[in-house]
Length: 186
Image 1: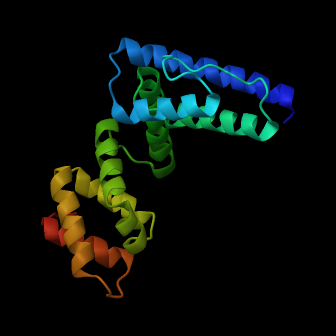
Image 2: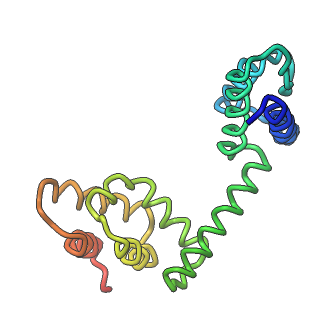
Image 3: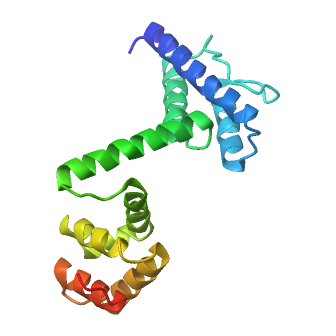
């Protein structure tokens, strides 16, 4: 990417960040994590700490500094789930993922139930992927989620993983243990 292209990309990304910041401040933005990210962006871009918004400040910067600035602006736009625009984008991406899951798996899972399932998998995801290394685990967990509360499932899943630590079991055996622990007829 040339320096001129970097300037143009930085301009676009800075405008997008500032649109998000306007919405964030209008919504009463007081989130410490977002404020910390904003302060970091200000330091990378060379914006005054007193300014509420991000300025481009691209003059006299070397190409590597411009690339870093662009990278950080893009990261903020992708990371942001706290501003109203960021929340709307997250919801849109979640709904796209839900539709793709339904299309690919043939599932008839409702969106809110799917979100619970994703949260459960996310909460204990590392253990699931280490212990339940199969795509069938998602389908079985879907059946479990339809019959229990998320907190119960998380606790039962943690217990099953802890009880079976070091045992040579396959995915189906782990899921059978989970279903037995929750006393579910599948």
